[in-house]
Picture (cartoon, rainbow, N blue to C red):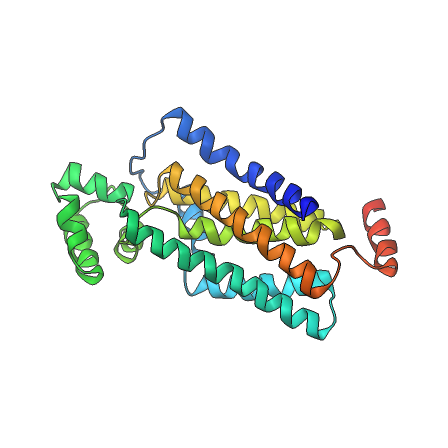
Amino acid sequence: MLAIAKRTTLGAMLLLVMPLLVWISGWQWEPKADAFWLKGMFWLTETVTQPWGIITHVLLCGWFLWCLRFRLRAAVVLFLILGAAIMVGQGLKSWIKDSVQEPRPFVIWLEKTRHVPVDDFYNLKRKERGHLVREQLQNEASIPAWLRKHWQNETGFAFPSGHTMFAASWALLGVGLLWPRRRTVTLAILLIWASGVMASRMVLGMHWPRDLVVATLISWLLVTCAVWLAQKLCGPLRPPVEEKKEIAERENE
Protein backbone atom coordinates (compact mmCIF):
# COMPACT_ATOMS: atom_id res chain seq x y z
CA MET A 1 0.00 0.00 0.00
CA LEU A 2 2.83 2.39 0.85
CA ALA A 3 4.53 1.86 -2.52
CA ILE A 4 1.23 2.51 -4.30
CA ALA A 5 0.62 5.67 -2.26
CA LYS A 6 4.12 6.94 -3.07
CA ARG A 7 3.56 6.45 -6.81
CA THR A 8 0.14 8.07 -6.92
CA THR A 9 1.28 10.93 -4.67
CA LEU A 10 4.13 11.70 -7.05
CA GLY A 11 1.72 11.64 -9.98
CA ALA A 12 -0.72 13.94 -8.17
CA MET A 13 2.07 16.38 -7.34
CA LEU A 14 3.00 16.60 -11.02
CA LEU A 15 -0.62 17.28 -11.99
CA LEU A 16 -1.00 19.93 -9.27
CA VAL A 17 1.95 22.06 -10.38
CA MET A 18 0.11 23.92 -13.15
CA PRO A 19 -3.19 24.78 -11.37
CA LEU A 20 -1.36 25.76 -8.16
CA LEU A 21 0.93 28.13 -10.08
CA VAL A 22 -2.07 29.68 -11.83
CA TRP A 23 -3.92 29.98 -8.53
CA ILE A 24 -0.97 31.62 -6.77
CA SER A 25 -0.41 34.02 -9.68
CA GLY A 26 -3.90 35.47 -9.23
CA TRP A 27 -4.75 34.88 -12.90
CA GLN A 28 -8.33 35.83 -13.82
CA TRP A 29 -10.14 34.38 -16.78
CA GLU A 30 -11.26 36.65 -19.61
CA PRO A 31 -12.80 35.49 -22.91
CA LYS A 32 -10.34 35.30 -25.80
CA ALA A 33 -10.91 35.83 -29.49
CA ASP A 34 -11.08 32.74 -31.68
CA ALA A 35 -7.62 31.28 -32.21
CA PHE A 36 -6.15 28.02 -33.40
CA TRP A 37 -4.71 27.17 -29.98
CA LEU A 38 -8.04 27.87 -28.26
CA LYS A 39 -9.87 25.54 -30.62
CA GLY A 40 -7.20 22.95 -29.91
CA MET A 41 -7.91 23.26 -26.19
CA PHE A 42 -11.59 22.76 -26.95
CA TRP A 43 -10.91 19.50 -28.79
CA LEU A 44 -8.74 18.41 -25.89
CA THR A 45 -11.59 19.00 -23.45
CA GLU A 46 -13.91 17.11 -25.81
CA THR A 47 -11.92 13.90 -25.25
CA VAL A 48 -13.52 13.88 -21.79
CA THR A 49 -16.95 15.25 -22.73
CA GLN A 50 -19.75 12.84 -23.64
CA PRO A 51 -19.99 11.00 -25.96
CA TRP A 52 -16.25 11.14 -26.68
CA GLY A 53 -15.43 10.56 -23.02
CA ILE A 54 -17.04 7.12 -23.22
CA ILE A 55 -14.82 6.23 -26.18
CA THR A 56 -11.77 7.51 -24.28
CA HIS A 57 -12.75 5.40 -21.28
CA VAL A 58 -13.15 2.21 -23.34
CA LEU A 59 -9.87 2.76 -25.23
CA LEU A 60 -7.93 3.37 -22.02
CA CYS A 61 -9.49 0.33 -20.35
CA GLY A 62 -8.42 -1.80 -23.31
CA TRP A 63 -4.89 -0.41 -23.28
CA PHE A 64 -4.48 -0.95 -19.53
CA LEU A 65 -5.70 -4.53 -19.82
CA TRP A 66 -3.26 -5.19 -22.66
CA CYS A 67 -0.34 -3.64 -20.74
CA LEU A 68 -1.08 -5.61 -17.56
CA ARG A 69 -1.90 -8.88 -19.35
CA PHE A 70 -3.87 -10.41 -16.54
CA ARG A 71 -5.73 -13.68 -16.99
CA LEU A 72 -9.40 -13.49 -17.94
CA ARG A 73 -10.88 -13.43 -14.43
CA ALA A 74 -8.38 -10.89 -13.16
CA ALA A 75 -8.87 -8.80 -16.31
CA VAL A 76 -12.63 -8.69 -15.77
CA VAL A 77 -12.14 -7.67 -12.13
CA LEU A 78 -9.68 -4.96 -13.17
CA PHE A 79 -12.11 -3.68 -15.81
CA LEU A 80 -14.79 -3.37 -13.14
CA ILE A 81 -12.41 -1.63 -10.73
CA LEU A 82 -11.35 0.89 -13.38
CA GLY A 83 -14.96 1.64 -14.25
CA ALA A 84 -15.96 1.90 -10.59
CA ALA A 85 -13.11 4.31 -9.80
CA ILE A 86 -14.26 6.66 -12.58
CA MET A 87 -17.98 6.35 -11.76
CA VAL A 88 -17.53 6.89 -8.01
CA GLY A 89 -15.47 9.98 -8.75
CA GLN A 90 -18.11 11.38 -11.08
CA GLY A 91 -20.88 10.65 -8.58
CA LEU A 92 -18.95 12.34 -5.78
CA LYS A 93 -18.29 15.29 -8.08
CA SER A 94 -22.02 15.75 -8.77
CA TRP A 95 -22.86 15.64 -5.07
CA ILE A 96 -20.23 18.24 -4.20
CA LYS A 97 -21.31 20.50 -7.07
CA ASP A 98 -24.91 20.49 -5.84
CA SER A 99 -23.76 21.16 -2.28
CA VAL A 100 -21.24 23.96 -2.94
CA GLN A 101 -22.95 25.56 -5.98
CA GLU A 102 -20.00 27.61 -7.19
CA PRO A 103 -20.72 29.53 -10.45
CA ARG A 104 -18.56 29.03 -13.51
CA PRO A 105 -16.20 31.83 -14.63
CA PHE A 106 -18.20 32.50 -17.80
CA VAL A 107 -21.38 32.89 -15.72
CA ILE A 108 -19.64 35.51 -13.57
CA TRP A 109 -18.58 37.21 -16.82
CA LEU A 110 -22.17 37.19 -18.04
CA GLU A 111 -23.23 38.92 -14.83
CA LYS A 112 -20.58 41.62 -15.27
CA THR A 113 -21.07 42.25 -18.98
CA ARG A 114 -24.70 41.28 -19.63
CA HIS A 115 -26.15 42.03 -16.19
CA VAL A 116 -27.47 38.49 -15.77
CA PRO A 117 -27.58 37.88 -11.98
CA VAL A 118 -25.82 34.66 -11.03
CA ASP A 119 -28.60 33.62 -8.64
CA ASP A 120 -31.26 34.16 -11.30
CA PHE A 121 -29.20 32.19 -13.82
CA TYR A 122 -28.89 29.15 -11.58
CA ASN A 123 -32.52 29.31 -10.49
CA LEU A 124 -33.41 28.39 -14.08
CA LYS A 125 -33.55 24.80 -15.26
CA ARG A 126 -30.54 23.58 -17.25
CA LYS A 127 -32.30 23.83 -20.61
CA GLU A 128 -33.45 27.36 -19.85
CA ARG A 129 -29.91 28.36 -18.85
CA GLY A 130 -28.67 27.18 -22.25
CA HIS A 131 -31.36 29.24 -24.01
CA LEU A 132 -30.37 32.29 -21.95
CA VAL A 133 -26.69 31.91 -22.89
CA ARG A 134 -27.62 31.64 -26.56
CA GLU A 135 -29.86 34.72 -26.42
CA GLN A 136 -27.28 36.82 -24.60
CA LEU A 137 -24.38 35.94 -26.89
CA GLN A 138 -25.97 35.44 -30.31
CA ASN A 139 -24.60 38.79 -31.55
CA GLU A 140 -21.30 38.61 -29.64
CA ALA A 141 -18.71 38.44 -32.43
CA SER A 142 -15.78 38.19 -30.00
CA ILE A 143 -16.97 34.79 -28.73
CA PRO A 144 -16.59 32.00 -31.32
CA ALA A 145 -19.76 30.08 -32.14
CA TRP A 146 -18.30 26.75 -30.99
CA LEU A 147 -17.45 28.22 -27.57
CA ARG A 148 -20.94 29.72 -27.21
CA LYS A 149 -22.40 26.29 -27.96
CA HIS A 150 -20.07 24.68 -25.42
CA TRP A 151 -21.24 27.14 -22.77
CA GLN A 152 -24.87 26.39 -23.64
CA ASN A 153 -24.26 22.70 -22.94
CA GLU A 154 -22.21 23.25 -19.76
CA THR A 155 -24.39 25.39 -17.50
CA GLY A 156 -23.92 23.47 -14.26
CA PHE A 157 -21.83 24.47 -11.26
CA ALA A 158 -18.04 24.65 -11.28
CA PHE A 159 -16.62 23.11 -8.09
CA PRO A 160 -14.99 20.60 -8.47
CA SER A 161 -14.07 19.89 -12.09
CA GLY A 162 -15.57 16.66 -13.40
CA HIS A 163 -13.39 16.75 -16.52
CA THR A 164 -10.30 17.05 -14.33
CA MET A 165 -11.42 14.14 -12.15
CA PHE A 166 -11.86 11.94 -15.22
CA ALA A 167 -8.51 12.82 -16.80
CA ALA A 168 -6.54 12.95 -13.53
CA SER A 169 -8.00 9.62 -12.42
CA TRP A 170 -6.82 7.91 -15.60
CA ALA A 171 -3.39 9.52 -15.38
CA LEU A 172 -3.02 8.44 -11.74
CA LEU A 173 -4.33 4.96 -12.53
CA GLY A 174 -1.55 4.79 -15.08
CA VAL A 175 1.04 5.81 -12.49
CA GLY A 176 -0.34 3.34 -9.97
CA LEU A 177 -0.82 0.36 -12.25
CA LEU A 178 1.63 0.74 -15.14
CA TRP A 179 4.75 2.15 -13.50
CA PRO A 180 5.84 -1.31 -12.25
CA ARG A 181 5.68 -2.40 -15.92
CA ARG A 182 7.81 0.63 -16.88
CA ARG A 183 5.27 1.92 -19.38
CA THR A 184 6.98 5.31 -19.33
CA VAL A 185 5.71 6.50 -22.72
CA THR A 186 2.13 5.72 -21.75
CA LEU A 187 2.58 7.49 -18.41
CA ALA A 188 4.07 10.58 -20.06
CA ILE A 189 1.20 10.75 -22.56
CA LEU A 190 -1.42 10.33 -19.83
CA LEU A 191 0.09 13.02 -17.60
CA ILE A 192 0.46 15.49 -20.48
CA TRP A 193 -3.08 14.77 -21.67
CA ALA A 194 -4.54 15.19 -18.19
CA SER A 195 -2.65 18.46 -17.67
CA GLY A 196 -3.89 19.67 -21.05
CA VAL A 197 -7.50 18.85 -20.16
CA MET A 198 -7.10 20.70 -16.88
CA ALA A 199 -5.68 23.77 -18.63
CA SER A 200 -8.47 23.69 -21.21
CA ARG A 201 -11.11 23.90 -18.49
CA MET A 202 -9.63 27.19 -17.30
CA VAL A 203 -8.99 28.89 -20.64
CA LEU A 204 -12.48 27.97 -21.87
CA GLY A 205 -14.06 29.75 -18.90
CA MET A 206 -15.41 26.62 -17.25
CA HIS A 207 -13.38 26.36 -14.04
CA TRP A 208 -11.27 28.20 -11.49
CA PRO A 209 -7.83 26.82 -10.52
CA ARG A 210 -9.13 25.66 -7.12
CA ASP A 211 -11.69 23.46 -8.90
CA LEU A 212 -8.83 21.61 -10.58
CA VAL A 213 -6.77 21.31 -7.40
CA VAL A 214 -9.57 19.78 -5.33
CA ALA A 215 -10.63 17.49 -8.19
CA THR A 216 -7.06 16.18 -8.47
CA LEU A 217 -6.85 15.53 -4.73
CA ILE A 218 -10.15 13.62 -4.76
CA SER A 219 -8.93 11.59 -7.75
CA TRP A 220 -5.67 10.83 -5.94
CA LEU A 221 -7.54 9.44 -2.93
CA LEU A 222 -9.91 7.32 -5.03
CA VAL A 223 -7.19 6.02 -7.33
CA THR A 224 -4.88 5.05 -4.47
CA CYS A 225 -7.68 2.92 -3.02
CA ALA A 226 -8.56 1.50 -6.46
CA VAL A 227 -4.97 0.48 -7.25
CA TRP A 228 -4.61 -1.15 -3.83
CA LEU A 229 -7.85 -3.05 -4.45
CA ALA A 230 -6.67 -4.11 -7.90
CA GLN A 231 -3.43 -5.47 -6.47
CA LYS A 232 -5.33 -7.32 -3.76
CA LEU A 233 -7.92 -8.90 -6.08
CA CYS A 234 -6.03 -9.26 -9.37
CA GLY A 235 -2.57 -10.19 -8.18
CA PRO A 236 0.83 -8.47 -8.00
CA LEU A 237 1.42 -5.52 -10.31
CA ARG A 238 5.07 -6.44 -10.81
CA PRO A 239 5.71 -8.05 -14.20
CA PRO A 240 6.34 -11.81 -14.45
CA VAL A 241 9.82 -13.05 -15.33
CA GLU A 242 9.13 -13.40 -19.06
CA GLU A 243 7.86 -9.81 -19.26
CA LYS A 244 10.91 -8.45 -17.43
CA LYS A 245 13.00 -9.45 -20.45
CA GLU A 246 10.63 -7.52 -22.72
CA ILE A 247 10.86 -4.47 -20.46
CA ALA A 248 14.67 -4.64 -20.47
CA GLU A 249 14.69 -4.81 -24.29
CA ARG A 250 12.26 -1.88 -24.52
CA GLU A 251 14.36 0.29 -22.20
CA ASN A 252 17.56 -0.51 -24.14
CA GLU A 253 16.10 0.55 -27.50
